[in-house]
Amino acid sequence: MSQYQVVLSGVTKTYARQHAVNNVDMQLKAGECVALAGHNGAGKSTIIKLVLGLIHPTRGKVELLGNDVSSRAAAQVRAQIGYLPETVALHPSLTGAETLAFYARLKKQPLANNHALLSRVGIAQAAKRRVGTYSKGMRQRLALAQALLGKPQVLLFDEPTTGLDPASRQMFYEIVSELRNQGSTVLLSTHALAELDGQADRIIVMKNGHKIADGSMSELRQQSGLPIRIRIALTPGSESAGKLPTAWRKHNESAYELHCSEHDKVQAICSLGNINGINNIEIHTPSLDDMYAHFLRREDV
Amino acid sequence: MNAVFIITGKEIRDGMRNRWVLATTVLLAMLALSLGFMGSSPTGAVKVDPLTVTVVSLSSLSIFLIPLIAMLLSYDAIVGEVDRGTMALLLSYPVARWQVVIGKFLGHLFILALATIFGYGLAGITLQLVHGTVNTSAWEPFVFLIIASILLGASFLSMGYLISTLVRERATAAGIAIGVWLFFVVIFDMALLGVLVADTQQTLTASVVNTVLLFNPADVYRLLNLTGYENISMYAGMAGLSEQINMGRQVLMVVQLLWIVIPFALAIFFFRKKQI
Image 1: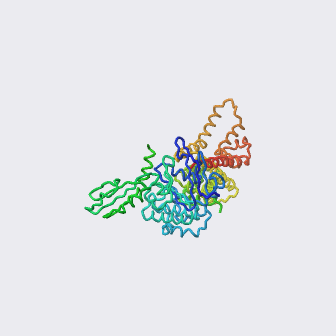
Image 2 (image 1 turned 180 degrees about the vertical axis):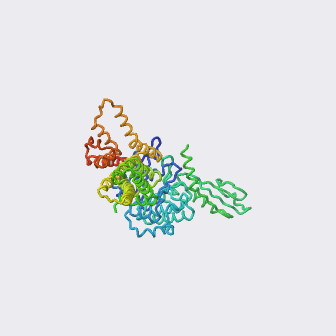
Image 3 (image 1 turned 120 degrees about the vertical axis):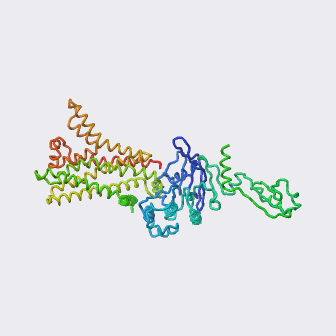
């Protein structure tokens, strides 16, 4: 078995006219949390469905835990998978506990753990109510609970945090980091990039079915070449402004600003070492949203 | 527990919860009762068990109603779940696609069978109690009517599943299901009648017509019920006909089973290829 839990090699998926996914390569290791970022229709959901074997690639190969997903063995491999669909659809006439019991039986898991799982996602008190009466957030939590059944090795979350309140969102990312520490692979798609900071080991940016960037947060920052902005405030009336390297530009009366690359960042700060009267240093690194917007723009050219 | 039965169990529970079982049982019981009471007025003179007359009228009405109920149950079975997204979730579990289709089908068949047995059965018992004559010989065709009705329902269920697998939109599935129902229940017989009337040269022999009838599960059902028992065929006005029909009950049963198996096998075949 390869060291990768999920491998996509040269995968293309074509619907009637358009390429939903175009020649994408992707490898996910155990214990890795990878975020799939992209605009609506960028191919995020399609990739997740390909990994699940719900759809078959037009070209290329998708491997899941060492098995081709279109093979017969894949049906049994799916016992090792947790999936949280984009639109949470559960059967409204069943209660929360019955829903979880139904899915636990399908995964051949003992029902004894179900209550603990419902408490873990915070809906134990509503377990005996019908899912039809649940709020959107509660349904999302129940769907998360079914994805966690049987401690899966690979978890696929399709836009898991849309429609969740901040507390639920936090709970969700706590669970994700717990899963990652246990050695599960987590692939989650999102377009709310800001909340990924510190959660994802790696981010894959998709655009119109193409993979346009892949790497950790700081790697992406380097790839994007977006400048880091360093701003210093000097004591008013200080003479040291003249000693600043010429690259520093005056922002206002006492503040100066420098745009530099990730690469030159440390050197730029060191060069301030012999300058007196610095009141404050602010370092503004490009946010995920900045980078993302940049990647999308760059491809447009 | 096998995945098929887990899915069947869930489907039955769904049917109980959303009152499908209750509604169809009450509908079928009311129908059987009203036909039994109204139909029994002419039997006063001839001393025929009310159940026998009921079988005749009930089989004519079941031909319309049972396929309709089956279609309503099944047209949404696959396309509806795909549309709502529950199918994607279900297929992310260690379940083979054929298990999903068979499991759901068995659940729907159970719902239909339960409604038919209880609805018709209760009505049958009531009729006999009211008339005070418990005639066991009249029960045989009545029980057979129930079995044949379930088989008829199963054949339309399996056609409904095939439709539900092939289309992408729920509305399309509903439209096609009603169309198919109308074709087999109304249009087929009218067209056949029209052809027979127009056929002044009598080129269509009885055996040709017999064979043609086998291409409609509703007609197979009619033949099974109305020609199977001498008493019944007399009251149905089919006594002369049943001599012409030399197909045994076994042949008719096999044909009806084929009407269940073939569309259903096709449904499984297409569902396995379907992109969700």
